[in-house]
Image 1 (tube, rainbow, N blue to C red):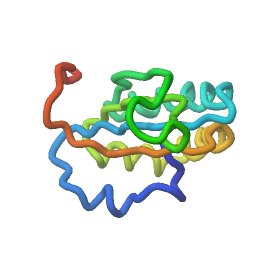
Image 2 (cartoon, one colour):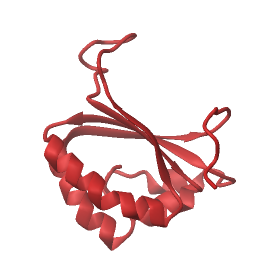
Image 3 (spheres, rainbow, N blue to C red):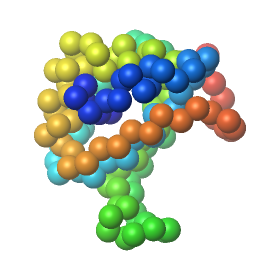
Length: 125
């Protein structure tokens, strides 16, 4: 997840908020241990807002695109019940404290907000 300085909160907040959103996190890492710490601190924040990690995995190779410029070390898909839930989390004091570890961990971090049009993953209960 991006820090408050990098978040396009106005843009995210201006999108229709009619249901779940999946945040596609693309990460180029400097320090995996710092990212692990960030993840440990943010998981309770995500869950408290009704969110869940759907999938996470290591980037292996760029199958289509520029092998270096488009390379990502780690990919995480996080579903939130709404865009408002995501914004609430990243604006919290607890997130600001956890974000210090993210800033230490990542060389580059892109988050794409994706509205679901199809999924085989059942919605959370």
